[in-house]
Image 1: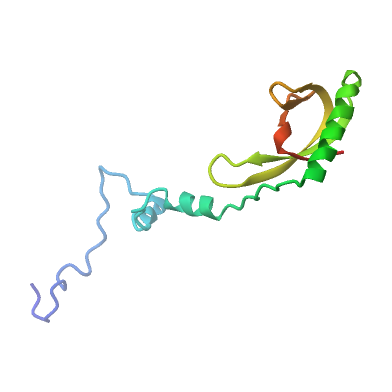
Image 2: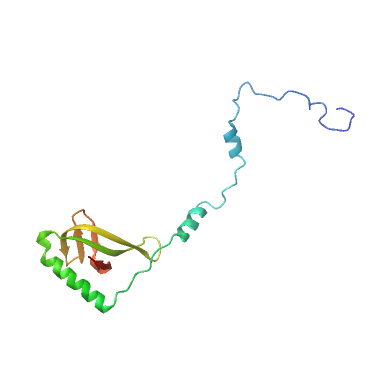
Length: 135
């Protein structure tokens, strides 16, 4: 050990050691060693889900419900013509309270009063009880 008072004076000027048997780690992998530890796995996705907005279901008044019933009856009378319509309905969210309003455009294949659905020609199923507008 050197007497100048520094512990590493004897090795400070030696060349950097490079292994002959182990390849050097890429810089990108070396940087990953120092990335923050994810102690709360899934926390980020929970925060994103909580921040995702949904719409509240609109409750129609009696007049609006009666108007929708009249429109459905007219469509049922013309179902053999496969009328083209635009139907706006509420689609409940699977993960949280609320949902979103969707507008289906196209021709009606069938109105099924037993299942209370409208079957569109593109295969989409529209629950009648969720409809707020038919054009």
